[in-house]
Length: 476
Image 1 (cartoon, one colour):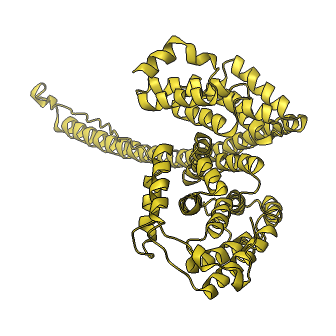
Image 2 (tube, one colour; image 1 turned 180 degrees about the horizontal axis):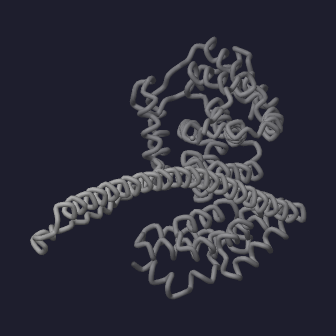
């Protein structure tokens, strides 16, 4: 970017700036609306520029020399700060310069470049387009074309997709995309800022500090260096006694009067019989009382035994509960030992590297154990340093979810693959194809066609595009 000459005498009044909108200066939102409306096609854009430039001949506004000098001074200071990576302060100065000199092409172009670095794409486009309409200069035309290109649209889709991941609490997936964006465009500032906030939220202090150090080389006066963030702490969730009936047995002996048979028996004999009968009755009553007493004793003994048995049952039930608790504790300990053993095996595999994790997942997948296969593919994704194993693990995870009839999860992994890697990777067109077929089988025809249109744009030589199935889908 050129520096502005600050000598007042060199400012020519006849070359003062022009305006091309027949609206008030304060109607900024309408201006942006007009710019975006002219974004439709390049022909419409060129026609708009010609019409606006034609109006320059009849609409002129002359700024006082002092105001121009002040704007040039702010412009030069912003340019110098930007060259030293103080982007935040540079944007503030260039915005102030634009407020007092809103039709200067160089100020508009510098503002567009700085807004682009901050990932404020709408304002960047507005600045470049406005500068192009005022002067049709080469720099603004270059960036208007770039921001209107299919390539930038694909980039913007990836950027927006990573933002949606954050809204859906898919932080790891969002971090992967922002990592790849930083690798591709290390001068863009916003991916650093979002990643730092994600690291802070997830408690990854070491990664956060490392990225803050990298951010200082890109935007040395970013607001994150002066802001204290509150760390997020999250919180977590009758004894039955049987009764028996008492049975009493009574014996009554009745003696009939034999006097009717032997009327001539002496009264002595009759008296004797009466005595015998009385004695028998007394004996029977005494015997019955004795039997009742014995029965009562036996009943008391039975009740005592029942009480003892009830107490033993309670004690037995208590011991059974204790045994049950010990068995539960033993099961828990066994599970913990199994988990520890599994973690030790996993740690051993992790230590061996991402290839060992990936091959373990492949072996489970080939055996039809897709749940365990997913476990090791995800471990491979988390611990991979080489993009080849990471990309393959993402694709294989999508295939495993398909086998488990979890199409939504499968689509998310295929989408993750095409958003993170380019067509040079092995499963790039396969991921687009699988995603398109799953959308089609789920009666989402437009999404299916969009997948194959994107595949045609990204990899026009893909063999999938000439298959009859894909051709038929695109014809519908």
